[in-house]
Length: 41
Image (cartoon, rainbow, N blue to C red; front, side, top):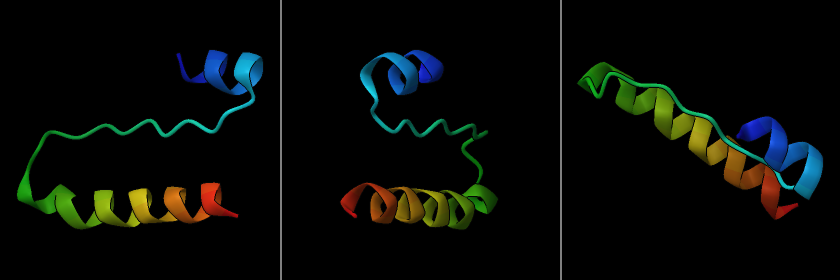
């Protein structure tokens, strides 16, 4: 899905994998914030 979105639609795509553990929270926060900064430019 991500490749189709990027290639055919020209839109950025964020793919996240998690096991929903507490230890993933900060990693997800950093990745989501970086993605949001990227698409706001």
